[in-house]
Structure formats: C-alpha cells, structure tokens
Image (cartoon, rainbow, N blue to C red; front, side):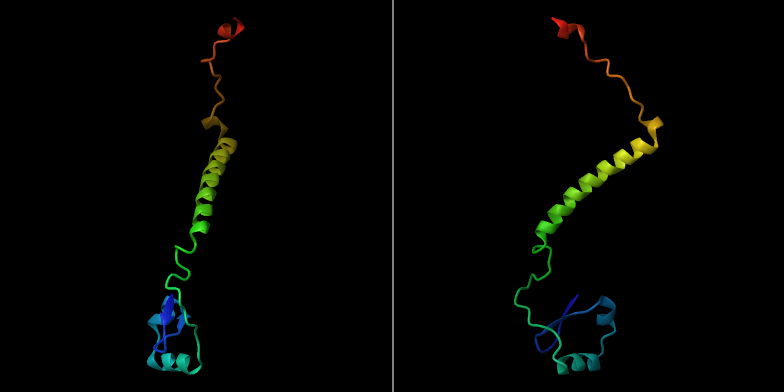
Length: 94
C-alpha cells in the first residue's frame, strides 16, 4: 500500500511493514530522501487498469470452455453422443 511520509513523498510498503513502522523508521525514510511525489491520486488504481480488467473477463470465458472440454474428454460417459432425431430428411427431398 502507498504510505505518505510527513514530507509529502509517498512510498510503497507492505501492510505488515506499515503496522510495524516506528517513528524512528519514519525519520530514517525522510532523512534518506525515500519516496516520490505522486501528483495523480489514482496512480495504480482500478481506473488506470481498466483495459487489463476487460482482458481478464475474456480469459475467464475461455477457461470455462476449457473446463467443459476437459470433462467431455475425460468423462465421456456423462456426455453421450446422442443422435438428433428432430431433423426430418423427408421434408428436404421435396
């Protein structure tokens, strides 16, 4: 998660690091000039990754097709090949 230091710079820290952060650690980060100034409040947000999210939706659809294929291949008894008797070939001859 992003953590903003008192000098206005922002750094990326794990949540466990933020929970264990002491005032001495904050002073050290400021003294070593760590971090960067972020002007965009939506940096690395879902809004900036919208195209990537749309691509993952299409991947989920192909995964469901792969699952269907897997079950049909490895469990053929559950998906018998039935003949479609609804087509009347006598009507097609006329």
